[in-house]
Length: 249
Image (cartoon, rainbow, N blue to C red):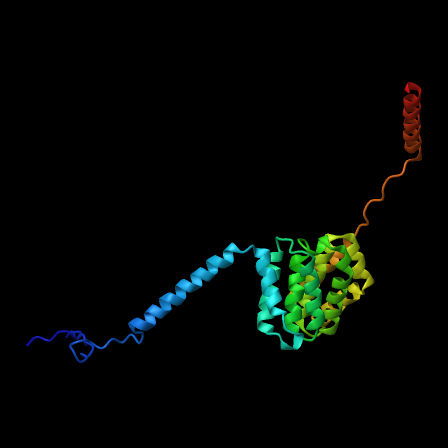
């Protein structure tokens, strides 16, 4: 007969029947497993809803307290790292209090050789500079020293150097006194050293340039104006008012 294209009919293969007439299901999850998953999902949503009812700054304190409850050698570094980054994210827009400012410096001291921990802490210091650290001047010196010392100790680690320079720049944005502290703590040499060692790392170079720019913007606060003539006039007016009051009596 006449030739032509042949079409292959598609055959649908049905799953084999199980005893009792039921077909075998390829889904490995049975009804019991599905119910357990649904229950776990509901519990997860409940936990999220409960967490949202707790003020965010209290959540920060709860996380960091849990992560630092043990002695430094017995801490879960993954849990600690997550808590530090949580501080940074919340601290961008909220004053977390002087206890958090102290904790950041203490974490660097306790985990000085742990590059991941210190790099994340430097990032959080940068995030909290404007909202938290600026309000607690009595901690400025120790925080600046921690940042500079960490960069110098981990001078070969690009992430620590990048976050450290970022922290220096953010601190210097806040106050002329912080700019002075960075300068007095060999901050300029530290910035230039980091940029020299990591001369091919664009992030280190960018953060270093920004940190130097913040230092170059340094201007002392204006001195209070003193005008002896105005002072004498004011004193004379006060004396005249006192004399008039005495005459009236």
